[in-house]
Length: 395
Image (cartoon, rainbow, N blue to C red; front, side, top):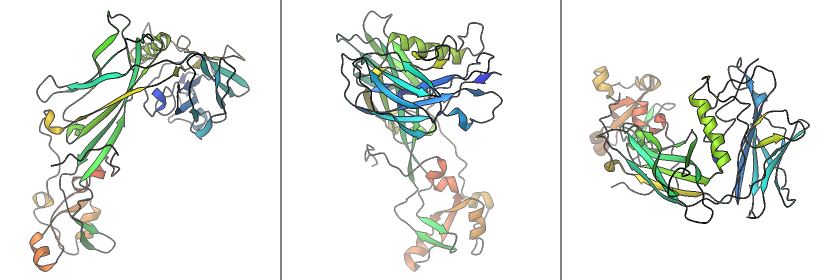
């Protein structure tokens, strides 16, 4: 029976975050499970390791048994160091605090699972150079926005291989900044002038392998290497947008490992597609070497991060149309008392208050209605969790 290497929450999570890259090669035609291990040892960080197994292509959903939840994982050192066992957080995820790392000591992980012992190759901590800059360009009018990273290493470490991931945060707002709200259970309206559902925030983490090398360059420098791109019409750029990029050094062997995985994704089932038996990483089963393991664990002394903001007036966007015509234009008339609960149930929300009636008579009634997602930014995938670093930029 063929099996499938799971993506998403299971495997190949970059830099111990939720950022993943799809990886779905066809495995050999035997019934043996393949173990997947993902994570890196990073100084002074609570690192996450994820352990899972392949599962049948006949499965419609990820089976619970593919998560390895009964393993014991420790960090080991060439000087005899052995950490306490990692904390099992479920879904094949193990958390382990990492303290200071000695530059002269080689580190790896050791996994005890199902009567076998797995171990990654020991390696000394890699030093990551600083990110020089994160930048963006929009070459064509109202076209795609491209994001780039620049970095270099002129130290004795001579880092030439890099991996990046990024986290995006952006602000969105509803079409109608409404102050009138309907309390369905009481069939009454109330007013909140703070416009509580006007502004929201959204978040996304990168979901692909982002690697680069200066090996073929004369200088050990990357200038404006493209990381990702995004259409300017996306709601990311409707208000304030921010991205933080994390960079870490990787070894040449790790670079080639991730290159093989990228090729596996791009050339699935192609004539020269590398098979899983070729993509093995640096983890072995030391008690039974014939057992297959996929994963690459490295030791990292530090990471580098840089954040930038993109303000809406800095780029050009096409006109983006919505389906937020008010109810009066759609229906030809507004709901009357006794109809409010029905229209609310049908997805309509009060969008504007009759300011004259409210100001002079204290009567709270809507002067317009609109669809829920037009008045509540939460219905467009946003949350009210404003990031701590978010500036007060409105004017």
